[in-house]
View (tube, rainbow, N blue to C red):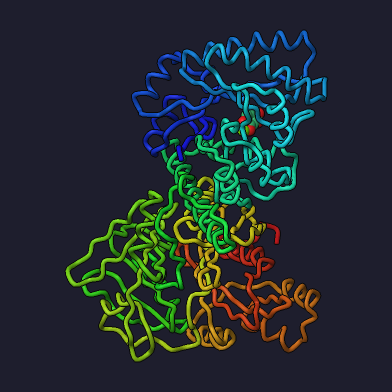
Length: 625
Ligand SMILES: O=C(O)c1ccc(O)c(O)c1
Ligand SMILES: [Mg+2]
């Protein structure tokens, strides 16, 4: 389907926006009126630029407060409309979005609104313009798309149809299935936005918090299937009012936006195909995706586990001290690069000193095991993800790598070899001169906690959703001394891969951590202490709180206190864990899950943040203590 975007989604001047949309690969744009009003380019110049860039101008919007008014006001509104149609003629745009009256409506009547829209339709037709009527979620009388369609139907004018905007429909909890009752050719335009699940007034939610499809809580794939079944063939257009995207780089945001549409089309096409298969089995011929115009891309190949985590620094020796204390073994040095591998069980940590001058230790890459790396790479390429540069020597495995938001490199590998200790990623054979893999208590990587700036978080959510097929079960918030840290947990359906995406407070380099799974956290902590590790200290107040919350016995509490362990419990099981101090920007967490405990001890995060802050300040207290 044609891909379009409202200029209101992006930062910059109207020309900047057009260049960025064309560069990202959009087919067309909606001109948000204010973007034109504040521009020093004439409508003719904008039209010529769009033409040169190969962009169609699909919609002019919004025309406000038209229907449900007194006869005197109607005449004034028609005069306003004539001026706008004049502008549209100069721009060469043939569809105007008219949103339901929020300010001046005094008549709550389908008949009256329909008659007034018919008058507007007559005027519009004389300019060759079509009117797409949109029910705003906060319209004075009209806030439901089913009613806007009823009114457009009553208006019974070839130049009057509806505009459907997923935000207004889904924010009110209205069932989108009734879209299928609207003839496709009367749906004149479609606007798409996702949103976070917030409880607030719909106007503020809409104007500040909309997200690109795939980044929020709504099933927009399903929404698009209703449009396809209604027979809609016009553009799918993003209309995302969002305070962050109004500030981020125009070109980057346009690319990010297009990725959301590519993902959405694929998802909707797959849902249609699945529904079609069901209908087919039930004996009906309907439901084929043929003709829906929705483009499918390569299958998603959800990672089956972590191959490795890469830490990069000019000097990684402090990290190696920590790994040794935790019981991982030095597996070897890479044959041709200043790269070293440490491991225990399936926990593989790659330490990279290549091209890392003056860099402190930080999380630089994640390797995932996938079933078919070439298919997974095709998908990433279809989603226009930038490939990661990699220098590979003859005889070395050429892993497919991609750059995730904030520069983290994600590598995908499907080549494994049998070793005496079990299966291993094939690239591990490129490391030698070390000891065999440790078979200690550490068994693998439990989860990763990665940080993004406030301006890259939503893009990161979309990356892990669209490229790797991870789900986003929950959002948590933890208060730290330097600000609130918001975390979006992303995980594979099996739980084998979990990545928690943190939004760091502005100006704070929030620690990233690698959580290692183990079979006996007390033993790991004991041995680490014998080897000189001082875990992140946990205050006594925390243990008092644990006693109050869980009624733990004194023996358990003193064991926890002795090893500076933290604890959590759910109906399904227990979670025991501790953190190492950080080295550069990274630290390690060691975790032991028992039973079916499947979350992340979110209540313990503020304890970590406060303790880490004390360590960063060298334990200094304000003077007077
Ligand atoms: O917030 C608004 O006013 C507004 C304007 C035009 C739209 O299409 C819309 O969905 C919202
Ligand atoms: Mg809209």
